[in-house]
Image 1 (tube, helix red, strand yellow):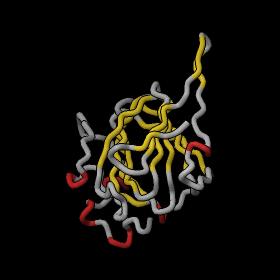
Image 2 (image 1 turned 30 degrees about the vertical axis):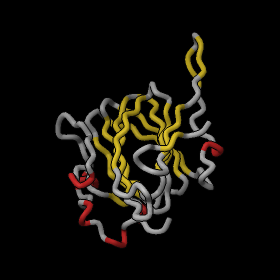
Image 3 (image 1 turned 45 degrees about the horizontal axis):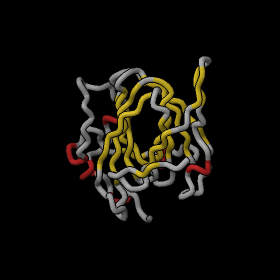
Image 4 (image 1 turned 90 degrees about the horizontal axis):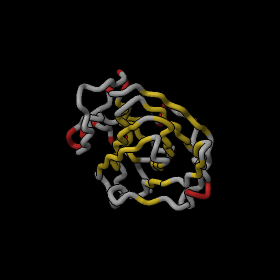
Length: 181
């Protein structure tokens, strides 16, 4: 299976997973190292997140961690913003709606600010290639107009205290921006 690269943000991949089913239900492989030949992927941690409807998480970004997301149940709207100064899509933004019914995976490389809005209650599994490191858990304000993300949020979302304190893009310290290629 080959991922399809985003037409908006370089190196972000979506994967339409093969689904096999019969009258008993459905089966799908969620992750294989070989789906990511462009990375020396080291799958070291798998996380599960459950969010109630109207929750917004993010935007977060990392210098040393890639994420691979798969929605198990519910619907979320992924928000992405390319912070990588060397990228041909630097400063591009994109939203992608994903549902547990879609059997779609999303690969998010380091340097891409990412978050999601829970359109419904949602359960998300995500694989990362480095252990959690608080020093590599950075953020930018999800609602910064400079990002150009159209979240289509119908009311004031539920946002963590930490995420409400994320700085605007213009206020990100230079030493926290992605560096290298």
